[in-house]
Picture 1 (cartoon, helix red, strand yellow):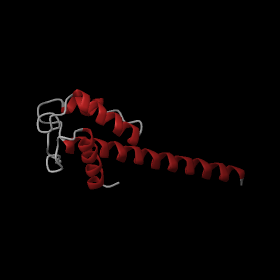
Picture 2 (cartoon, helix red, strand yellow):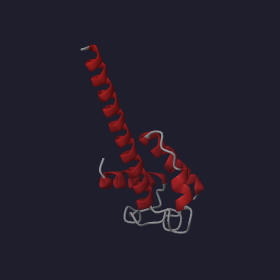
Picture 3 (cartoon, helix red, strand yellow):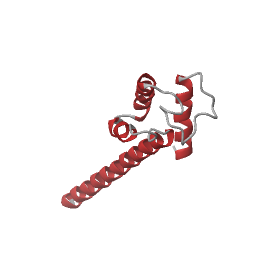
Picture 4 (cartoon, one colour):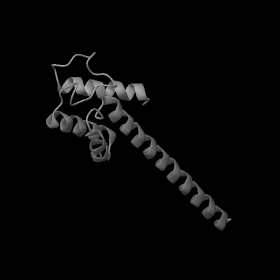
Length: 111
């Protein structure tokens, strides 16, 4: 999933949680609390839904960083998820390479 698809996905979730918002309201630069009026209930609902879809991601570091006025933007949440997915993908690649290396070493020992 590229960044734009991820942004669209998060925006759609925000819109599904708050029927009082219009699609033009939910932009990358919109503060979730100040511009979109999301309180802790809405944020927790959004984070719970995203956690189910993304996996074992922990949103507490993002929330701590974002809790400063105006830093809780839709884009900052998308960036955080994107960074997490990139790290997860890199970790999987490293594990695959390590397993392939171990398998190669085992084949060499058996030969």
